[in-house]
Image (cartoon, rainbow, N blue to C red):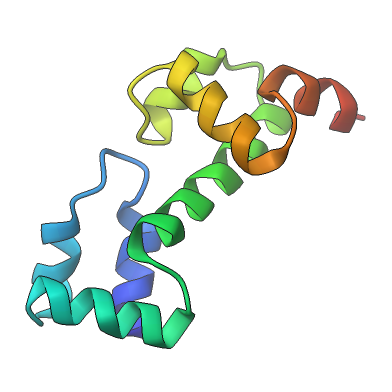
Amino acid sequence: MVRAAEWIYQNSYPPFSHEGAVGFAEPHPVQFTRRLRKSYRIATSDFVRSLRIGKVAELLLDTEMTLDQIATCCGYENGLYLSRVFSKNMGVSPSKYREQNRL
């Protein structure tokens, strides 16, 4: 599962393919999901979302990229959807996060 988690980490920013992760790890999709949940105590979708949100937060602080550009880099459809996901997970909008955490 560690190798599968590494694969997910490296491939979660373009639109994520559950089938790609399963193909890498080789078990049936249901078995893969169960193993990942057992190993990391988190659902595959939550695992990918946390990786993406971490990357979004990093890009917000380290670049001048627009939210649409960041969305594209991190596997989200557009900046509006990314803003909703980010706000829900971080408790603050991306623009507020950028404003409050930049040095």
